Amino acid sequence: MRSLPHITIACGAIWAGSRLLRAYARTPNDDLRETDGLNDAGGSVSEAEDHIDYRLVAIGSLLPDIIDRVQRKVFRIQRSSPHQHFIGHTLLFHLPLLAAGNYLLRRQGDGRLLSVSTAAMTHLLVDPVIRSPATLLWPLFGFQFPEARGLSPGLTAATQVVAAAAVLATLVALQRQDRLQSFVSSGRL
Image 1 (cartoon, rainbow, N blue to C red):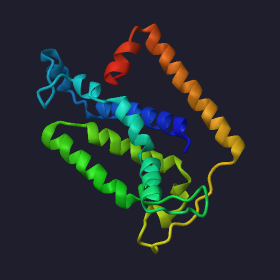
Image 2 (image 1 turned 135 degrees about the vertical axis):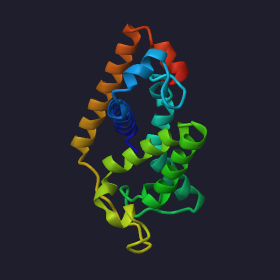
Image 3 (image 1 turned 120 degrees about the vertical axis):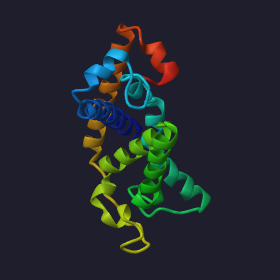
């Protein structure tokens, strides 16, 4: 499990995606609604973006590896390779999670599960499983989980260093803006 790159990529993707969606969703009438401070759902325009808890995003980004580790222990699975993935790295696990998160957001306005499930999907995009359709689309191509080759040790180390630098830069920026304590307590950037 290479945690830091997964967390960094998930947080960055969700942060950028939330800003893109907000910009895309803006209409000329938004300027009128901003004057009264409300959006269509009755909340403030910036409030929807503020609901992302990046602590949950971090947990979600590690969810596929956590699920697979628990599965190995519970079922005493001896993996044939350190690069072998199981249920946590399949769309069969992730698509229902995304659907449930979307449902809760639309029905109850609670985006926490959607944050976790979206972050978990980013894990699949950066793991070697993306090049392994037999795992990603399991069980469509059979019930065996094939080995998925990861990055070379040098490239893995490089991704860890880059991710650590990104995390450090974010923490320093939050500290300079006197927002680090708020981030730690709320998870909001």
